[in-house]
Image (cartoon, rainbow, N blue to C red; front, side):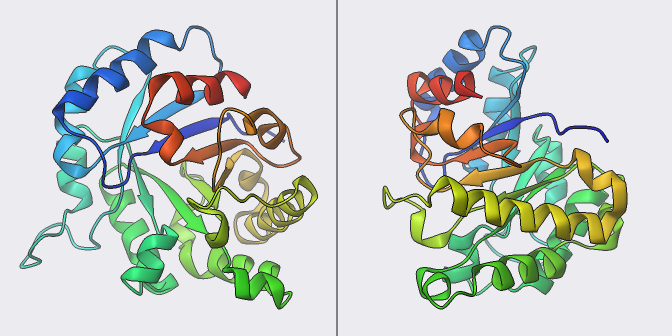
Length: 247
């Protein structure tokens, strides 16, 4: 069994300008020997500039979404091919904000994963339940269903990560209890093993949803938590580095 290498990924969402590249450079400068993989996923307009700014560093650059086709008449969309060409190494797919606001289904997310694989991008596939679903006792059913529906068989033996982001915890300051996180992460691990066998042992399962410097250590040392997908706290190098060093 190969333990996952921890991954701390920052999702800048619709934040950041050219001047924000200084924060990314500060992250690279402050890593030291952290022993974890670190990525920043800026808006698509910054991917190329950030990949150039971080050239030679260990910080990976990723996209926040990708279309399932390589090119075509899809005004406003960005393809995995474009992201790879701009220097991205990873891509976030199926984030709850896209599943909700853009009604993205598991089937669509799976098609996007295939597009990412075609371009050599490492997918970070997001799953998570709403507050209504959790209160109804459906969290495990919903999350494991999303894992099964969003991860195509082609992922076997390919590098990828799953990010558990309870929808009700994103940007709210709320977080599940450690036992709740461990329960869901354990269910995700079991589902990954049923899909991909022993190869799933090395797949990192990230936690996302109001991860901050003051709660990162407790979350990151929970059972089956092998990293974090960080939102607002990744916009400032000082906060993001505190989370990285807590791993």
